[in-house]
Length: 300
Image (cartoon, rainbow, N blue to C red):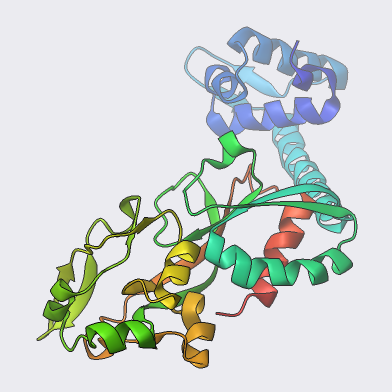
């Protein structure tokens, strides 16, 4: 027996859906019930109220005056119940285990420094953080939130934008002293370009030349699994790298890395989103608190 068969609010919900969808069969499909079960439920509601709510015919359903009045009142009651549940969820004290998956650079430079303050604000939330530059399936990894750097491609996920970061090509002063500073994108053919070991730059590094965007495919003697490894190799003088500006901002300010080919930078950016799975707009309090905190505190 469906849980909707055993409570008055469930009867109201089924009745209103029958009216809205115009039939028992369509309402049954919406609730994954049989048409006969829906019909019996409405009949039981009518028996309990002692009035006929719907005049049934082979062609269509027609509300009785009592049915119309009950339908309008039932809608208001169901709306009030939904509002009460939303308010209760929002007002609940955030607690429990929060699983977060994030890219390595974002995690090390932006997320982890924020966690002590987050823990003070929400002491009942336990945070589990996994750092990886691989795109994971939230459901398979049982993650509540994932930080995605780059264009969003999964429509089944909900997202909140945290900001965006401009891309920049960089190399260390020692590397440039030894190999020379590239003056045009064509000069990169004579340089060691650090690459990712996965298809992050499948279309190459874009540059603006004479009003057109051209791509240079990186080719070098090192492949890395994540942006943090690439940043370390660039600082060590291994080669030229292309990374998000937030990732290398401190290195540029300290002189450990130098931007190159800025005159040809197309100004492309990488959006950064917190993505999550939503169920009818409802989120656990711990997830909602974390998302709100990120939007409030992340600065790019």
